[in-house]
Image: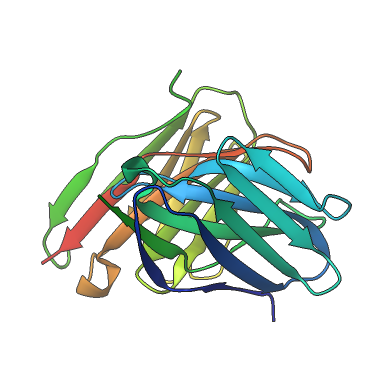
Length: 113
Length: 113
């Protein structure tokens, strides 16, 4: 069964600190892995997309890593800001077909001053 | 700059009512998707459409139907709303191709009372 699991479920950090969110997946055949940021009451917005051959992808203070052998990904946030408070969703695309996406349940991050 | 627009941010409907959720995209895409998002479950695919008047069931189609009369508009219909359909509903429209973005609407928070 295609699944995406994220940890932790929720996280609280102080402004300025770094944090790392985890994503494990069992999706086959694998096409790519995406991290989305979703503000409360809003639709998800893409942060990064990585294919099988990419190990690291950065977008400003966000750095995603992918280990296709162990089927793990992480999202590292550097020097967190209050505006980073959101849910972060790991999404894996299944190769072929109509662009089927498998969503993780998300990690809810709260950045406190 | 808006690419995917959902007609309502918040809706409150009564049990048994017929409910229409509208989604419009301005990118001339063939594919459009409807998801629902519930705490701890991630996004789950309800229906998708790959062309005008074409539709396919997703993972949880029961209690829903869809309509795609024009390329830019994809409607989700709750034939007889029930309280277990209280949820956040998200419409998405991806660019074709593997390394492509899937743009989401801002979401509709539906409450069935």
